[in-house]
Length: 168
Image 1 (cartoon, helix red, strand yellow):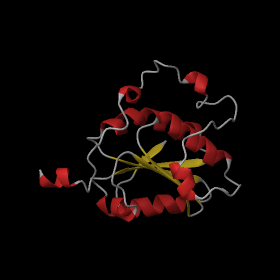
Image 2 (cartoon, one colour):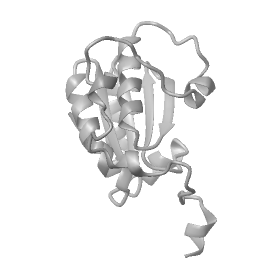
Image 3 (cartoon, rainbow, N blue to C red):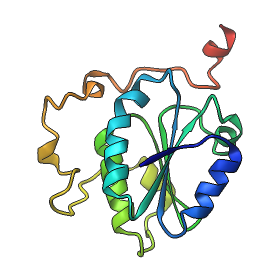
Image 4 (tube, one colour):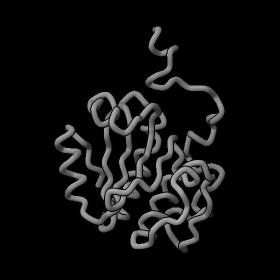
């Protein structure tokens, strides 16, 4: 189940209650198209990994203090934390990347990551190779209904701090 964060206090309580589980934070907005498109996959993954992961949804408009604390400037942004350690951050509505990142960090829950965070964030997503899961490539065919496949990812888009947005 995805927990929708209501306040800074609620957020802190959820982090505390997570214990040794993987924490996945989805920074999103109600008006964000890619956020809406990836939400069903996030729900699916939250249910699949419910025993080993806590999934939090932070609305950037309702929780500006948390958004600022994590330096969020684009949505959706996914933050992966385990035992207080930042494991990975990635931006974008890529369900395959989300799936493989969750699988990777839940699967490596007891093993420290040897690759520096900067390399993890900039590296392209590789195959998780863990067998028959929701993330297998054969389940992600050419026409999987994901509208983000048709969106060019190299187009400039406004962010929270973009001057074009602030001027209007």
